[in-house]
Image (cartoon, rainbow, N blue to C red; front, side):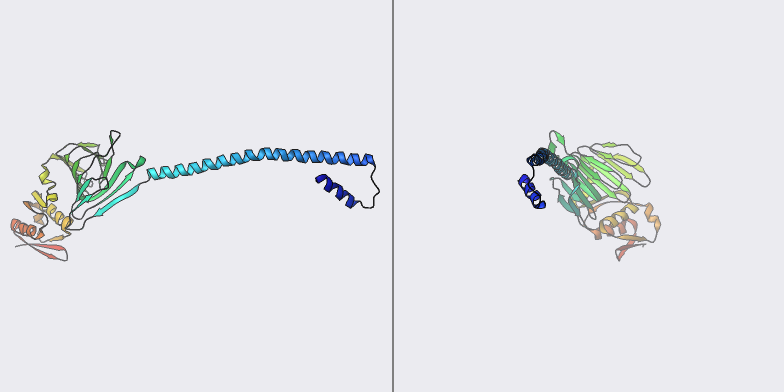
Length: 298
């Protein structure tokens, strides 16, 4: 077809020329044939190269897509995913069943926030503000326990499965272990501390004081049974309890009261009875105005 079109084009451009000599025709024909062969050969090369380019492009696209999908999968597996959050108000105690079937009893004015992290989200983590009593369920997987980390204001409690109580308010952290075994991590300027049943550790992040004692559980987790136990408790700690649990501040007429201590076992939900007991024990008058205790000597 190309040859015929070329012939017609030549004829159209040279309408007045006389008929070409046979030698000229043969020369022209040879030239056109050579050109035709070159065009045909180049098309064959292009046809051979084209599939290779397509295949390479397809492989590159496949690699990119797989990389994106694997990246999304890894991000999903490693993503810190919030699972649970619960808060209590003043004078409110609540029992919470976590997604892993662990049970937490939250004292008044407390909060927890739990999520999963790490490879396949097997590591459970939680932040605690206030006070909580934990009964953690063991999650066995290939003879290994999924880790639980409880973050407080001054360190981290690492748990595999146990019953323990944690107080974390202000600069103070108090941990009591009833059953199982836990360890305290990330305490400022302190090594990892392994705890055993009956251990009671108190730590103040501000003055960096720490103490470890053996204590009966009734003195620590009595609040879960609606009891509040004061055992030679400094009056300042009693006032802190009133503020943390009942949301009541205090104004003292006589600061010497802060040097005294109080002992008693009272219903945790009976504020009036606690205030009357304090009045009798310290010979004082207590009135409430605008969520503030006004404490005066009799």
